[in-house]
Amino acid sequence: INNSFKQSEFITPPIKASGEKLKLVWFSQVISPGRGLELILPLLRKFEVQLSLTLFGYLSAENKIWLDSFKAPVKVEAPLSQTELHNRISEFDVGLALELSNTDFNRQLCLTNKIYAYAQAGLYILATDTPAQKQFINDNSNRGCVISQDKQSVYEVLNSLITNKQTIRESSIERYREAYQISWEKDSQIWLDQFTWLLNKNENS
Image (cartoon, rainbow, N blue to C red; front, top):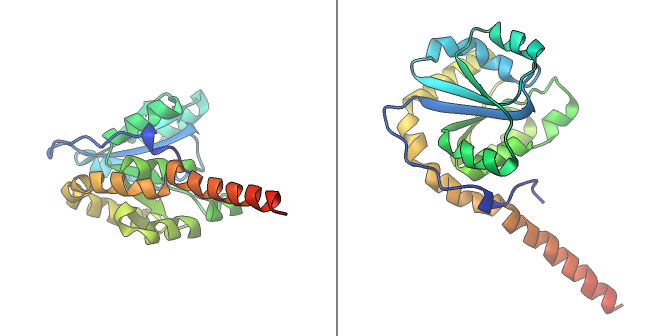
């Protein structure tokens, strides 16, 4: 069963003006090193005319020094409640799922809550090539793309995303509608069916 959310917590993606920058987003409880942001922060100044990045999460004084060292044009917003966050991320175009294989072995195998949130909000997902995330994107290539865990790969993909900005935006509602298939409303039925089957089995034993 997927570790997904209720689809009712997400809203239909709004229509975005064609002239706006491509809007990237990343969230976590804490903004800190070792979360994959190191792959993209050094490149943002090269693309500041074409795209923006917003980070949602708690930023300590120490980690602010780390973030400021990249001199990257980044907007930082405080953590939000789950429902508020799921509503807000619909404003963006691309969700960053930058998991690093060398952080710990679990990162290679897990799908974090952020990748489900991005998918359910209809965002295009930029995901690093951990086995779990590769499988998730390969199951439906309309969800996003997979990149190697190096800056050159990220640079090339950012160029491609900027070039295809309009296509990414036009397909957001389709991605949002398709996400029902991975929602808790859909997956909880699997659990309920199994639970019902066990109850019936025990009653008939």
